[in-house]
Image (tube, rainbow, N blue to C red; front, side, top):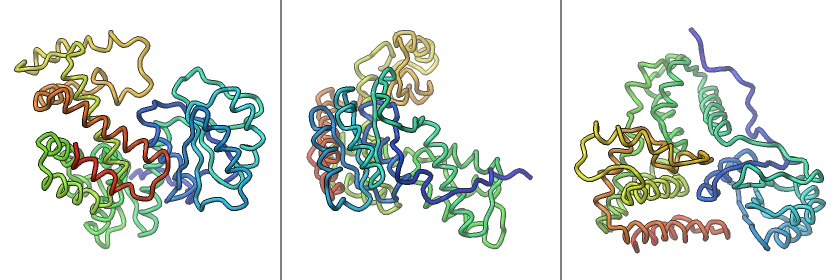
Length: 335
């Protein structure tokens, strides 16, 4: 019986001495950087810089006698001139902290003076998911079949849910060494988005008691604040696209009629976007249909206010804050 590949996995797949270069979207900058930053540390302290702050921040960190523990420096769309200016400082800093250069354009090229490893974010997500499963299973002397792993990956949409689900699976099989697909079917429910959707709808109703209750339940299950923020940001963007029309029928249209028009949406996006998760046209048809129906629950101003709150929180995190949950909860309650 085939098992998930028996990789030799170290705690961190990249050690100090490397600079990582990746291409993504500005909306997902924080989420993506934290994903990569966990290559260096389970609790990274991310400091982000963009524009005129790049040179000052890199110079300041490179010349510091002592650096914050688990520091990861993330540079968003640095100019070629800025990179050329700080190249020596980055070369010195990479041995003391994690360094991520994040571009939002696939055409961005690094100067020859900077040696960096190119990371594909989709492959990074898949690799990290597999490694986390392997590490957890080995710690308990367990194995998992390929079919079980594929089903687990399918049912867990957000990696933040993984630790809790693996614990449930390990407890469920007891003394058995191998976790099979039937175990995953019995234990891991395919309801990964329901709590997130319930939270967004509670915000729409301005039900503060329900907001606090759902958020507390998510965080108590091991969910990270950034994961909740990332899902809500993507959902609000999709709801805004659905509500504004953008070629997709809404209202009382039945699914069959909706799907005929929905298939044409991709034709309006040329070239295809880098982050397809954030565009209604690239969602599964029935999921997009449900988004179109759900968008009628919101006023346009409500969605804009919601998104503005998420953007303000995003800005606070980029500046570095140790009170992520407090800021996020206050924002949700104040929408």
